Amino acid sequence: MPAYPGTILVVDDNEINRTILRIQLQQEGHQVETAEHGLAAIAMLRERPFDIVLLDLLMPEMDGFQVLTLLQADSELRHIPVIVISALDEMENITHCIEMGATDHLARPFNPMLLRARINASLAAKRLHDQEAEYLHQVRRITDAAAAIEAKRFDAASLGPVAARGDALGQLARVFTQMAREVEARERQLKQESQFKSALIGKITHELRSPFVSVGLTAQLIQRYAERQMLAEVCVEAGQLDRQLAAGRQMIDSVISYASLVSKLTAPQPEPTDMAAMIRESTAPLQRLAETREVELSYVIAEPLPMMSVDHEQLSEAIHHLVHNAIKVSQPGGHVRLSCAAQGGQLTLMIEDDGPGIAQDKLETIWDVFAQTSDDVQRGVEGLGMGLALVSCIIKAHRGKLLARSTPGVGSSFGFRIAIG
Amino acid sequence: MTPQSTHGAAADSAPQAIDRAVIQQLASALGDQGVAVMPALIRTFIESGDALLASARVAIGRDDRPTMRRAMHTLKSNANTFGARALEALCRDLERRAADGGLSDAGAALDEVAAELALVRAALEAL
Image (cartoon, rainbow over the protein chains, first blue to last red):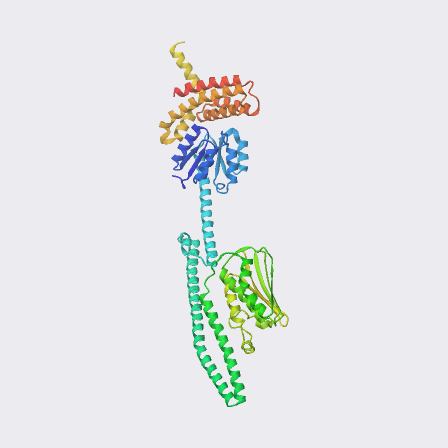
């Protein structure tokens, strides 16, 4: 028995040669199949795996040179060792064949020792190649798994066969799977904690709201009583207290609405979306608000915009918030301009206003939940914070990048950039 | 001629037509299956030899060099397998001629191949 029994394809138009070679190789313990010409051989090679091809050169239908050319051009078959068989008087052909990619050659009549040595050498090379290909294949499974983790769709079963290996690669796969499970568990925990936090914020703010309401009512009562008693100073103080309580209540309300929005914000459900249409639909209802505030709302859309796979509802919400904020901060006679363009595989959407602008230090935290400062509340500026925090959640869920620029006294632009593909 | 001298002539020509050592090596290379397979291989050689000669004759008439070349190539290869050295040499010569040039004067050479093949057949049948 040979070191590695193989499956060998003998290609020869000469029946006597085929028979002799088949018997000799079978005696060595190999599986042997035969083909009468190149066409038949190529068909068989494409149908099932072979370890070696023993190839005669002069054949009808398709000769050995054509078979070699076809094999070399086929990435699936190129690696199969080809041993060219010929008579001793055909040596110039052999040189040509080796140049064309043949592994080795054998001259007829076959010396049994030489036949065995050449076949075993080619089989060992083939086996090494197969092992290498299998190894690379399994390494690729690990890199695929890494990509899957990145995309949050890792399935530990995909690494099962690799993890079963006893070598270093197997160990890598096992460690990898274990780490992936830990990452997954941690992410799940973080998500639960984050949901719990949102729920807690919602609850606390609800509880906070009622004392604000009752103290507010008390302040109004005091104010009315002071009016009747003509206690001017108390009246002014009570009025101010009531306004401050109202501002506080408003802030609590926006925290409540943010918490409820975030708890409802699920993973994006992408669907094919006509971006230009979505932009117009999501901002059309704001046209009246703009008119009321005497703000001009205009669009600069570089059409045609590509179709994109996004969560239509969430992205509409984000665009709506950005435009809404821009209108709110604008003075009568101001301008809000929405621009959108696709370039370099990315879609960029910006909303510019010529409002009061924001100082650089505040701009850095503008997307945070509690970005709105007490100053803003006191000045009665309506909440930027909650809306922008929600936009931030949505854009991050779409793996996009938030954009913010502002020059105090000139205006601001807020927007985002997301990949089209 | 006496029956004895006829037998003598056959005995003389047979060793020249085939090399018995090659036949023995072939049989031993086929191992366990040698005994069973050898007669079938010899039969195939002889029968295909006749067919190849016939196609070579047709090829000469049509000046069909590729067919001539292939027929002589196969017959040469089989002659080599069975140690028919003279036949192998004749076939090699004709195969080269078919590869290199015309077949105008190939008829006589093919007659020689036919005569030698007959000797080989006789030698093989006498085994």
